[in-house]
Image (tube, rainbow, N blue to C red; front, side, top):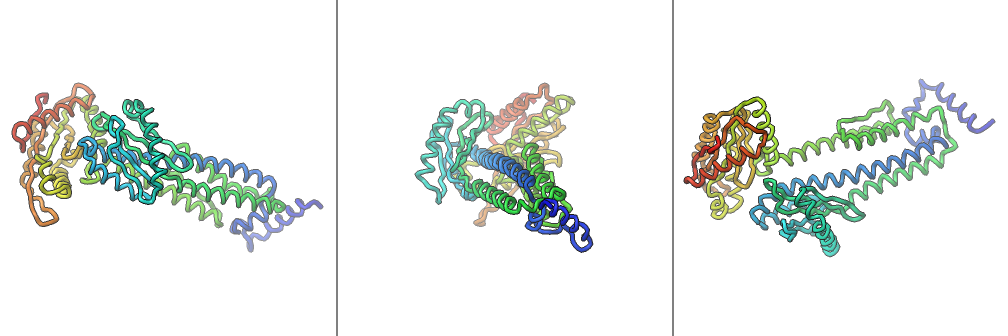
Length: 442
């Protein structure tokens, strides 16, 4: 009698012992003894190749995407420093990158591709990193038009390093570029571990090939292919709400639970990164990017519905003197206090955003000129009355100037009302500060 038939008969006997013995509850090691065979080994080999390929592409893409997100957030934070040629502030902001142990270096170039500020990790191979940065500088110079004119980032990855070159944009103008270099140790570790596990499983499968059972093959193969399909779908759709489940009570149950936990962590991280990308880290208000998106939506809606909308731009008066006299930490306290006053004074459905160093923008939905002016004046008075306490026990007071624009827009171009309210703010400052000025085009 052939050995395969004997094994088949034995498995039939095992199935008859279901009240005492549940095959699904065995460990994976025991399942391999009775399940895997030649056909299963081939299927596992194919699935392993597919899984490694998908994992490599997915992890590579994810690593570059994560680095690009860090670069986008950093470049947004560096806008003010580069706009005011403040290399000290830029250096401090770059120094915050040391929180990520994989980032080896970062360098800022101005719009002429001249170095502005840089950062190299203390544990990095300085000579190797600088040599790599020189190569990236030449790459940036060759692609200068793509970076500065199209405002597109460059990114790539090789065996030891990956990089992202991101333009630093302020009001539609590219002020320079931020280059971040990270090592690939985490990616290598993940791929090495995954390859080692795949190799181990394949070797074990070939060793116990004589214990194949075609009848029970799906009990082992279906969970694997289910997981591979889930990985492939996530890689293609970026749908991190996907989850997998199993009725088995073996190691696959724990593996599925860990896989679902991993997807949940990625989803939570994306939410956090999105919040960081749209929020000013100092004041907690929406940042310029978020404000511009909401402004465009408001102008478009108001234009189509023929409704009023209001816009107020504030500037803290003589803020440079505050920084010069008391220091930047006190200046930060002033900005946070002013932001809190504006957020508290605004209507529930207004949006208060910080759009520059000491500049704030208030978007007033469905607000005519009288209402918008009233909102601006109320905020100005509240700031004027406030007494700001510093950490060393001192107190100071500041004032703000404001420009107001309110209209029923005739076009969906959001840059026009922004230009007009900026002109109104300029008039308020030229007229003596601590006042609200109405735009000529209101």
